[in-house]
Image 1: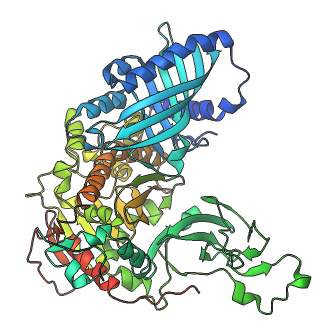
Image 2 (image 1 turned 90 degrees about the vertical axis):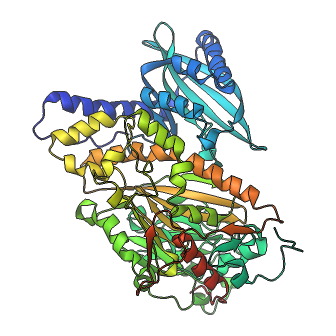
Image 3 (image 1 turned 120 degrees about the horizontal axis):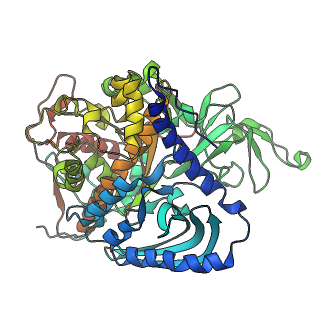
Length: 196
Length: 424
């Protein structure tokens, strides 16, 4: 599915049109990555084994609250997307969040703000990453893994399950794209601001 | 501090809801909650959905009205119907999906089949089931009325006409709708659904609370400052010319426009993918439309279940005395250039991520604090005495608690009035 292209600017040069089209192209890319995941062939076993430590490391950083270190592992054109359904498109459907690198950095700042009451005191989380699958792409790899997150806060806990898709690129296999699918978001969860 | 025996005596709302204070019991007593589901939610008009969500015959969406499962659907004649989602045979919920398209609702239990206006059109094996008058076995229907495409429904046997019920709130309602080109506003699918461990009225107390923005949303305002943006909430609530209005039937307005002379878009933070879309609009000579990408700066609250906040419709859905679900629906502007809705999506997520979690935390903290039986009262006295305007509307600075007092007075009146409710 693609979003109806925004109209070409009236008196503008192709440069602006390209900038605008680039937003839609990135959105289409995200929707296609999500929608196409179930149809992928069997994963590459060697690549899957290679990818697993990267995903486990990310989970460990997040559970430890090492958000600044986590932020370092993203490319400058990064997108973190939490759709509200598996059929969602970032250009037509609300998302829980769709962060570019700038907003990811703000999110880390927000987590450090003592007056960000929604995360102060902070959630304590335990992530269980499983079923790691990986496929090669021209500049890196794409992975799908299942995720169980147990969250503990204010004396209560909730457990959410879902899966995550990572696009890891370049020499350092930095995160260019992460899509986190949590089906419970479609029925109502308590303060989901711990979800990353 | 007060010595009290129990939480469960008969509820005297003249005592529980006083002009300057309210009793914790209206937030904690399960019996009061049960009564609210009929005397407030069934007896009042409640927002159910928007006509744009069900454009074609057979389209439907499910929701609840005071815990009752209901279906909003469009009939073959184009009319919008609100039906009780309950088979008239054994009581089975008919439509289990959040939304869909169905020419008929067929009960999965025994195959009873209903048209989209609720009429029973077929039962299986009719030879041994003599139904003399099928019309007595239609699905329960609610009285339904629309205002500007927004569908409201009620089980009140003698409802006030919707226009009268909205009353003076129509002015703000019209302003919110009419800012969309052609007056064309639509509602996107897939709401955010957020739950909190607290009573539904906590979100109502918050809706026209101009003071909390300075404290509860300090982190949102700090994030704004980091990007050189003065958010709409980062105003001195004691000196801003923003205005609160408390109206008949518990409706409330906070008009923030007088406090932001630069217009709504100037208050918006650096949301993702903002610049290319913003530049495209400016370049096309549509800079003036950018304000549409953020809210009207009028927070309109229609008691008991609909808040207009930013470009979202926030629907308050009670679940239990200490549990509430918030539905956050995003509105779109079909008559505007496509960049507007693309921006709205990211603008909408900004407060949901960096503001709403703080509100949710406050609601849960309040509910926890209200569990203390020895501390009975919640203070609501700021801004007293209220001025009595001729039309019954109370105006005040946004720090005034007049809106909370006014809606709670209306609430107390409803709770002391036995409700005549019925399904059509």
